Amino acid sequence: MTADPRIEDLLRQLAPQVLGTIVRRFRQFDLAEDAVQEALLTAAVQWEAQGIPESPRGWLVTVAARRMSDQLRSESSRRRREDAVAARLPSEVLGDGAADPDEDDTLTLLFLCCHPALSPASQIALTLRAVGGLTTAQIARAFLAPEATMAQRISRAKATIKAAGTRFSLPPDDERAERLSVVLHVLYLIFNEGYTASSGPDLQRSDLTVEAIRLARDLHRLLPAEGEVAGLLALMLLTDARRPARISSNGDLVSLAEQDRRQWNAAAITEGVGLITDTLSRAPLGAYQLQAAIAAVHDEAASAEETDWREIVVLYQLLERFGPSPVVTLNHAVAIAMIDGPRAGLAMLAPLADDERMAGGHRLEAVRAHLLEMDGDRSAARDAYRTAARRSTSLPEQRYLEMRAARLADHR
Image: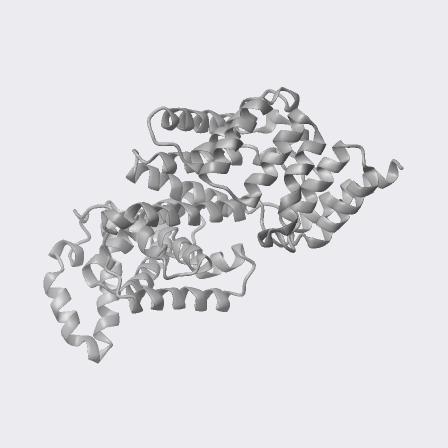
């Protein structure tokens, strides 16, 4: 957006606040989002040349509101509505750019972008565009999709919200917990796609992990008492702390057990451990908190050999009750194997062979290969690694799995 990272960070921080103000005033999310994007692009150019204004938020609100008024004015069928809205609009919004006194609408905007009428892919795209302040081109690059395709997805998402007649307000109390879980899941998906890209030549997309952490921080600031919000932020920090050690100097994936832990981000680990320790002591237990607690056990171990696998098994047993899934079972099986041996882990994996959610994916075969290798069955492990490599759509993961298979072949 701009060559100055200070300006880019500020614009991303202010984007949801400005959009919330415009949506609340004009009641048209689709047009408001376009107007705010134009204001952000204008600011990126002007602020770099002329400096950041005294009230950057007020400046953006003023420009976006004027763009919005121009759009409404150009549509003759909406003249009456424009006049009615303009009459309600505070003078400070359309005046000299003074700071808008209204509250921060980031939380409301997150709930809107994660509306249950939208598909997960549309929720992610709209969240990154409206709340994250990313351009359509940036989102398209992140998900390896054509810009035109991503533009259509975002446009359809906005049309869906408009057709649903959704009001720009927080959901009622009886819906809030369910809607918050959707918001957390969307942020979780954004982070996971950034930490391990589902396809393409790159293992990681740091732009997405950074954005997911930033949005999770904003959500934690808005909902400091929500244990699962703190748990998700802690999980992201503790997981992302390992990122510097996940890729070797020649670009190969490095497994957790083989990583140089001196490269891990100590500050992120300290912050994440502090967050999860605090929330576990005061908030009702949840799946994100348990995942963060597991990540903390890994991160606090001085070496792979010193990992407290018994504690991890207990945490996975709890997680199987709070948030059961095939991925949880896969990881639980590895932890069991570290205590009771690989055959115990393989036995836990057996039922997943019939789970439709695992069909065609590579993760089950990759974990089976690892446990078979631990059990000394090199031939079966080699075949499983090769199967997993064929099924993976991530080039770095393919190379890693093929390397493991080749290493077993070399030691026949």
